Image (cartoon, rainbow, N blue to C red):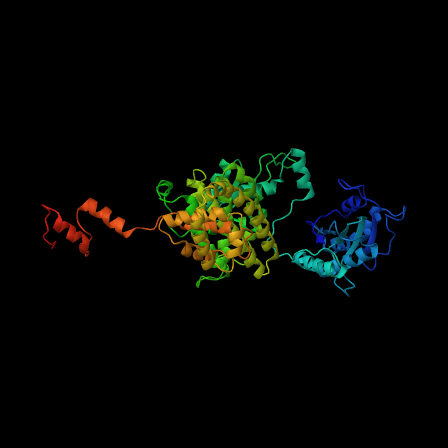
Length: 575
């Protein structure tokens, strides 16, 4: 059940005309009063043809008019309007049940507290099976204004209790971190203009997409302007940025002027102070040219950075804490967005959907210690600045993101963050689809190079020894031939398959893995991408370039004998 308190109005008669009228989008059927204040004492215009809306409006406004005459100052914003809607799958509620629900809502809201004979006047009008509208005038019988601070939170909590008491669909408790839902007028406007999204949702997507590209708030606003967003900064006398508002081109008011939305009203984590805290990292960043000269790709760098997310969310970091964990979850969202922008076109849809879904998981009532997640945030900037195309490392990064999203959902669930845990799980669905798509081409190639039977049996023994609890699932996984190839390639590079398997299983538990062999493939490929240094080969290389043995190392005995047996060789011992 959803109760949405609307912005205060000043026209009681006008709202009644809508409630008893034919409706603008959904047809209003049989509008009538199902509950009201104790002294309503007048006929319902929906039931009696001689009763008028004007009479009802005057009756509801009587305390308002009395206060106006006594104080000589007109009260404004006195019309309180709260639609209350049940879920489509909920059972039919009778008029009596809707009346009881309306009574409970006005009590907790502060409109008409229980036992208060001097409370505000109100009515509940029903004109459809699945919802009612509560209308109240917010001047009490004694002329005072009611205390409505945080009434939305109280009403939301009461709706959760109503759902339990009436056997309705159970929704999650609100935590004041959600974004404002577009109004019907905004959705109709978007439909009329041919927009896929209302202006506010469109703007939120643009701001989140710009975050990985900026290192400070000024850069962020410049990037938004370049992306076609109307930007209106608020500056102090010194020129310092104090705030900002953004608008979607073509979103005009009735006077033909651009409509602007403050960042903090678009989403709680997009206010200027919160953006500044996230953007300004404490670690020195390299120039993009220097980044491109690194031996590893941005995908590899980001996968390494996600290890810090794992340590924070699993409690293995001794210096951790809720604020640091929340910061890493917020930075993970930025990394998902950056990856969506730089990934191949066939993966963009799933990654963009993951980024949108994960936005709610990025914020909670726990204040994030943003500086703690600089490593992940810098990795996101590296991707949007230097990633030039996909390579095998992208699949490893997406697999690491899947695990990070699982950990984020678990962490939020442990903290009773229901909305955030649900958002992380929805993002996980899209991330898994993207990871599967990125890995599919490589799996076929790896399976075609499966080691010979004897080598495969040896590698299977390594699996049983390294991860005995999951060995049979791994060996029966359709991706086992590809994993065997990965292990054989790693062994050829000087790595020990047994050790790689143990390390990979320690970094990503396999109980929840749908295909454990596939999970191990990406992790082992990432870990074993560089061959193990060969000390003898390195010594030979240095000897060939310098003509001397490494300091402190004597010539091996077999080579001393060879020197002595070689005619013309200088056999004097080295000093």
